[in-house]
Length: 158
Image 1 (cartoon, rainbow, N blue to C red):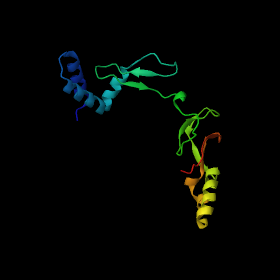
Image 2: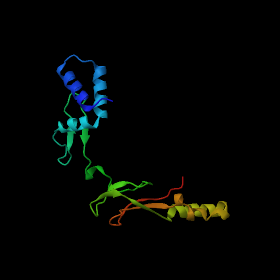
Image 3: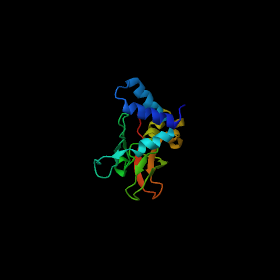
Image 4: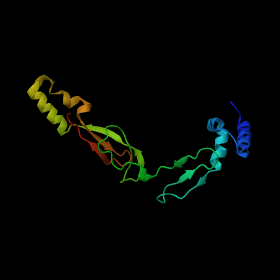
């Protein structure tokens, strides 16, 4: 692997030369992304552009490589409820104003009651299964900091 000074020398040589091939242009971009000392130089030359909504920090890396748009996540980019999700979600809690992963708990709900009634009529020795299976229960999402309910996913049969 090339060291960072060789890559910097290559970049200046290619920038001064107006007739360089696209294949070497791609190789230069790959070698610039692989070396960490050069990445600091690339990022220090980035210029901010006007934000879209006033609270987003958009930037375009201004070098002769292809332009890359980077954007910082804000609270508007996160979910505020976890309704309908069966796994942990990263949400913005409206109560405590924090961005965090939800805590999951299960609860015996109406969908599990319906399956239990169906099993009583079809094959009664298995009617206890929906009471113990987590997949047959409602999923409740809680904020881990303020313990408020931030989402609920009811069990649906079929």
